[in-house]
Amino acid sequence: MSQSLAGAFYQSDNACQGMIYCEAVPFVNAPDAHPVFRGRQSVHLMADTHEELMNYAADIGLRPRWLQKRGTPHEHFDVTGSRLRAVMDDKRVKKLSRERMVARITSRKLGKAV
Image 1 (cartoon, rainbow, N blue to C red):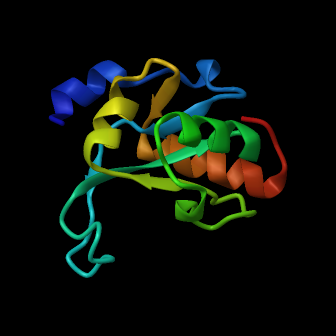
Image 2 (cartoon, rainbow, N blue to C red; image 1 turned 90 degrees about the vertical axis):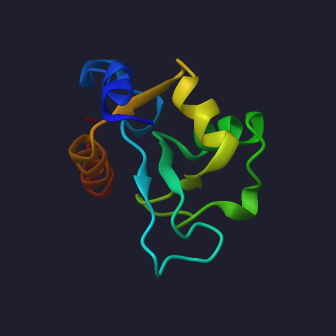
């Protein structure tokens, strides 16, 4: 996805409480990443609650065993391929800048709402 297309997806912070979210711009995984993801575009899919994340993941065909960092504030799915396109096109998923994703993780660690 190009930078200009991704910009159209960016959502303001006030629309994100109790939502599912991902980075506004997919990133390319490092060459030394897991072989399945090496060199492919991906986003981290997160939600404000475990239940929201797991329900949405089931809706788009992500397997529960693919959940990363289960039970932590960093809990997420790595989304690539056709599911990446589906996530980026889904209006239910709020697209945030990388900085906002980090802020949400930090606030979850501290137990605060964003």
